[in-house]
Length: 162
Image 1: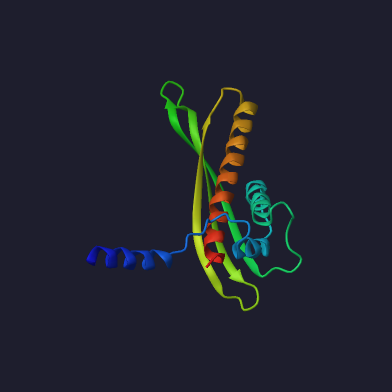
Image 2 (image 1 turned 90 degrees about the vertical axis):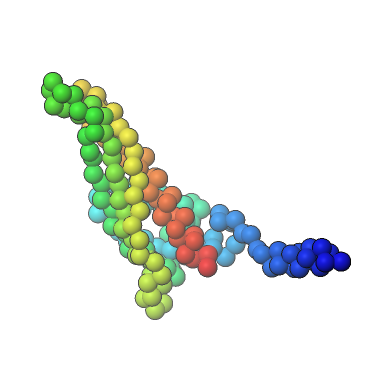
């Protein structure tokens, strides 16, 4: 009898639990994500992050005409050499770190919903040719920008899904 009551109590408690997927397209979070606008980009890397965020939040439909939420985005990129060749004192490999500071505000009253910093790192090999090195850095910046946009999109889904 006691075991039956315990099982019944556990069943009632578990019935109250609700599990919702973070990326559920039918949820209200998808509607809220589609009503987000982003601040203008200032350089190539921040433009890559912004464009990917617009695509991820709107499902490819572009920015909304009337936005309910606004994201002020500040993106910085830094290239760091980590594997030095001792004889020539030049880096053979490195990493590109893209950092994004952002603030999410409700447009209607200006309430700050979240302020945070996210960072993405992409590893890069530095070839001996200068143009190839520049292209490798650009490719690493693009990879890190996409990763950063996906991290920020996940944060936005969490904040707006509440």
